[in-house]
Amino acid sequence: MDVVVDTSIIIAIIANEPERESLVELTRGADLIAPSSVHWEIGNAFSAMLRRKRIGVEQAIRAVKLYRRIPVRFVDVELEETLKIADALGIYAYDAYLIRCAVKYKSPLISLDRNLINSAKQMKARVIEVVR
Image: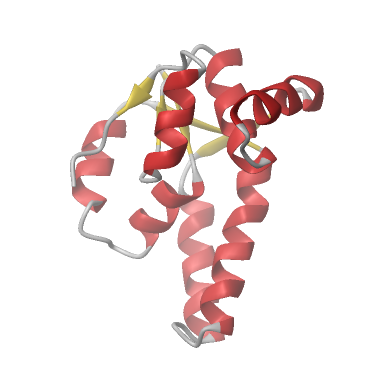
């Protein structure tokens, strides 16, 4: 089974956040997929941490090495369909890419972003709820 993962899930696993074990269990045996945009969002998340002095560049590089070990298959989603979702829900394209991915590939979306999960539900996408 494919599961669509977003940046929040990947960062939580890399950063050993409290939800890490639960996330690993919820995705055990699944093939992880994501729109290609997630790759760039990971870089943006680390650059934001660097800017805020939450991590140093060496930590960021180690984190990227861990990220590269997570087996995520990046897939394409149609920009036109993504824009329709963004317009219908009043959300940014980055979230709409994930929702489109879940709908297109008929796969549940897992995220720690409550707003994203609620938006996905509005589009009738399947979701995996993460209990915090």
